[in-house]
Image (cartoon, rainbow, N blue to C red):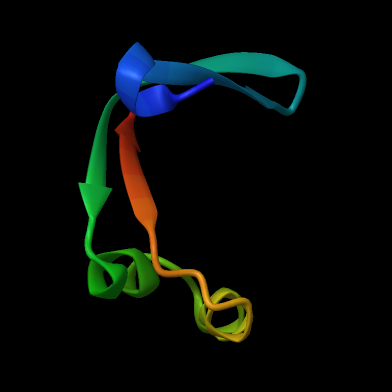
Length: 56
């Protein structure tokens, strides 16, 4: 599903369902800054440029 159209989504984490809302597109710089360095390197290698911020 499209989380922007739906206004949120559910995420299964450690056997619990977490409901996430208020999706916002953020800049590549903001998204990368939120990631730890090893993840940033992997995302750059995969040419990931789009990020969505969600609220719990």
